[in-house]
Image (tube, rainbow, N blue to C red; front, side, top):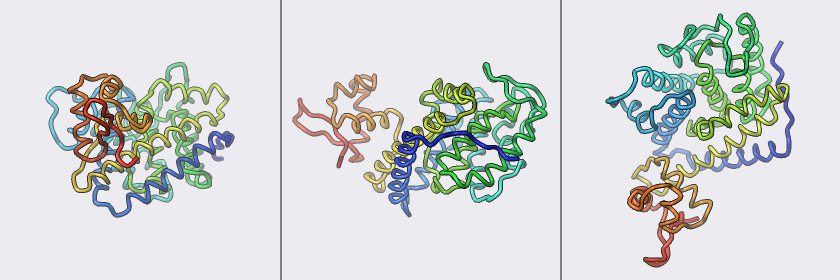
Length: 335
């Protein structure tokens, strides 16, 4: 037996998938053989690690996660929080190396979980399917004696029928079904999101590993959990979940395109966009132009704080100021 996902390709879902495909094509064309790909890969890995661990309650900031990746010590941080972050970095590297695998086995899933959950389990054992009953909020996952069989069915589907679907859909289906089975006593959320990335890498959707999809889930965590639970409320109909994930992938690619543009404009000087700078670029893209007062009000910072955000973007040539000294407004360059 294999798992058989239930869903309908609605006009909305089809439109999202088509937009994702168009964005991916634009990005793939822009990043061929460019020297800054490693910097973008590193930044993306850091953002995925921060977002996925933050969803589970890890309090470390993006800058602290970046510091750990670079081998710098954090003066005030719980050892467990650091271990969760370092584990996820190791897990993503494992997934990146395993992207070429044509057949995924139970042992591969167990090894990924062992890497992600080592030394941070509240219950159960890392790298071993659960032998206890667990509860996730109001949801009671399948009993432990059903886990191995359900995972076998999911892996059969992943290795065969999933290949017939767009990776936009197959990664979302894999993500949900894994979370529904909840095969481990702890660490299922991180593992499920890593598996969704694995599918995107494996299918060649993100060949350069530059899409930080987990930022989308982290951006509205209550909506993420609600979207998962709504599948069960709909009798395991995945349609709304697929629409949610496809929209998230579209937004992820839009963010990636902004980051790529920033690196293209800067040429040899590399700018790693900070969250507030990225927020500002999105605002300028949506509004066309903004006055200084509108910017610091929208970002919730002081005038000086806004200038600290603006200055690197101006120096990089990513944005520019147009108009007079008193009436000037900021715009994206070449937009």
